[in-house]
Amino acid sequence: MIIGFVALIFGANWLVNGATSIGVKAKLSPLIIGLTIVAFGTSLPEMIVNVFSCIKGSPGLAIGNIIGSNTMNILLILGVSAMIFPIDVSRISIRRDIPAGFVATFAITLMANDFFRGTSGTINWVEGLVLLAMGGGYLALTFKIETIEALETLEALEHDEKQEEMPWGKTLFELIIGIIGLYIGGELVSKNASILAMNWGMSESTVGLTVVATATSLPELITSIVAALKKNSSIAIGNVLGSNILNIFMVLGVSSLITPLPFDTRMNHQLMILFCANAVMFAAVFTGKGRKISRFEGAILTLGYVGFMLFSLYN
Image 1 (cartoon, one colour):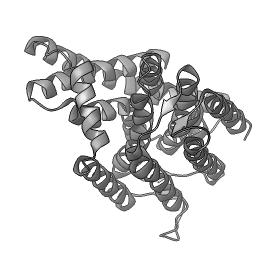
Image 2 (image 1 turned 180 degrees about the vertical axis):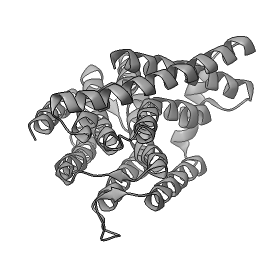
Image 3 (image 1 turned 45 degrees about the vertical axis):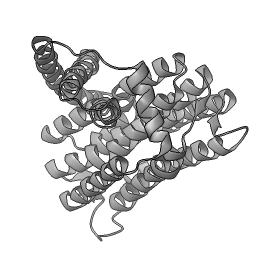
Image 4 (image 1 turned 60 degrees about the horizontal axis):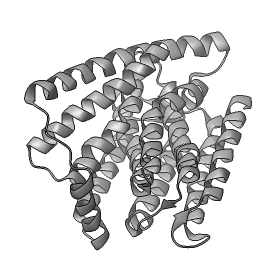
């Protein structure tokens, strides 16, 4: 399974590099590339693991993987990033991305607990289509909104982080190797996570919530830490918020089209923790000076993730 995680991380990185190079060749702006290719690339490990798990008959991993990944993104990744360098939060994120995260979490809570149906706890293909439609609406809104902050971000990216165009041979090579890496990684992780669940006496949902979620969130963790070290906090929080929204709308949406996703009602505790994590993040933005998540608040978020993991394993 460790080999599978390594293949997923490197495969996602190579695929994003190749796809970004194509975006550069197509004369797409860095902002558009970041909002589409890079943001989706950091969610690829969750997508691949969920798809393979559903195909292999282990859909119990899917919802746990997303809940665990999103909680880790907010509490651990934002927490560690803020401890390295305080995170500035833009007006766009406050008005659009943070509320979208609340809506996405609320949507899967209703769907998983059959608010719309009186049947057993699952997310079916109809609800999957609703999630995909909501994800499409979010992406359309993202592209439509044009503010001064967005234009300034675009100018900064074009000035500081303009990517060099790779030759076609290297571009295609990284695309192909990335796809192969994702396939091998998804196969190994989905298969061996189920074996671990049986051998350790844990449910597939719990393994997805802890072991698999932690590993599939490594790309977000690495990206945000590097951004924080470079004192580019907007990338750190943008990466986390974008990944969380895509995880629910796109990854769970696609997974539920393959097979109905069973929901263990005991995981409602973890969903409430995810709601609380979003609320704490939102509150942290407005406490202290400016719209920032300070080092102290980052430490609180990080301790919250330790508590989440201990509670999930004990529960």
